[in-house]
Length: 181
Ligand code: ADX
Image 1 (tube, helix red, strand yellow):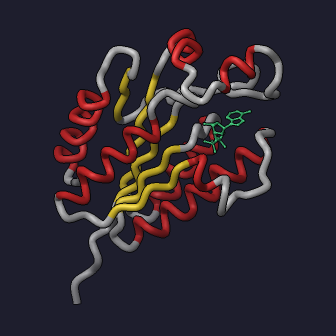
Image 2 (cartoon, rainbow, N blue to C red):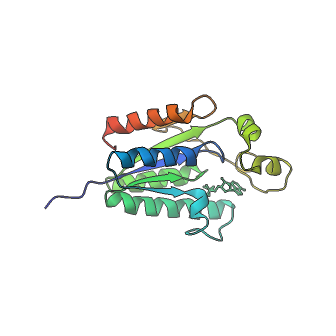
């Protein structure tokens, strides 16, 4: 009897618009090309299904992020590479999910997608920063709600200085080094 190879959990965290979704999609494509089973759990998407109806209060964000962690860990247990892309603003919850993964023998790779708030506000792809700064959206992460950056992420990318391709290369080579590719 051979045991199923455990997958890993690749956890993107960072502010809205920093590039988590873009990188997670690109990474998923790259891992699939090398024959991996991959699932992406994207914050925006999870909030329309698994977490429909949740708000952006601290309590609801914690519920949302714990759900994502729970599903990611289940997938990884069965050999799937689970990639998550939610803001996941609170360090304690991210670390709790990391601990649960490690306890199940699953590698947890935290990727902090950094981007200065000035750049995000200037880019404002979804127009949300403008509205948040105008006070039209309450509790907007990075503007009127906290974001706690990881203290020791496995990978740090800076989307204001790196192209998506450069960030992706960095991630892929890290995963190759630890055998999670
Ligand atoms: S999390 O905090 O619970 O991890 P999640 O990643 O699911 O957040 O959702 C973030 C997305 O919701 C943002 O990219 C943005 O499009 C949208 N959004 C709407 N309201 C807010 C808000 N108050 N704070 C942050 N993001 C918001």
